[in-house]
Length: 171
View 1 (cartoon, helix red, strand yellow):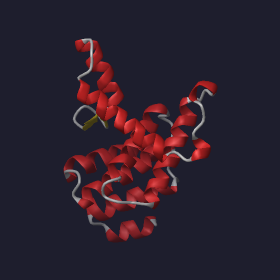
View 2 (tube, one colour; view 1 turned 90 degrees about the vertical axis):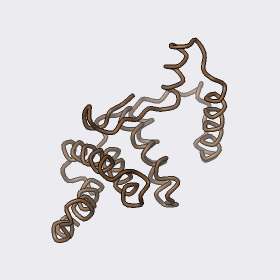
View 3 (cartoon, one colour; view 1 turned 120 degrees about the horizontal axis):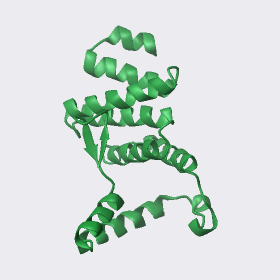
View 4 (cartoon, helix red, strand yellow; view 1 turned 60 degrees about the vertical axis):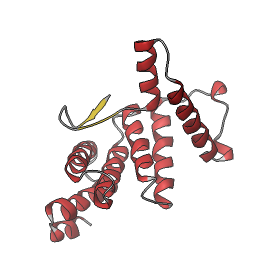
């Protein structure tokens, strides 16, 4: 389980981590989880471009490289934005922040995705805006001039503070 922004913030976990936890706890994983995980992996693999699908055994990537790939994948999903892929975008950014906690664009993107989900009604606004604020603060700590973070800050000013002029000044 991961907390974004402290103990009272949003909580999330990844399917592979839950599988690992269940294996340790029960010695096995319920079949339904394995089937969903296999389907998820299959769908993820089919989304990869042909050129990017390299043999994992022949290459070793650093966490920073993997985080950069996740951020790039999230950026591509923004181009074909739908309410259904916002949670995927947020998940990619979350995983990138886990792999490379010094990557401000991942925190800023996560903040934007959480804000968007709250605005569209996919997440409860209180929790989503709290978690988005925590991610945004981290992005701004790392790079106070990052454009993506300034956009997220402007979004927070519009949707949370109702500060239209403040948002306009930022942009």
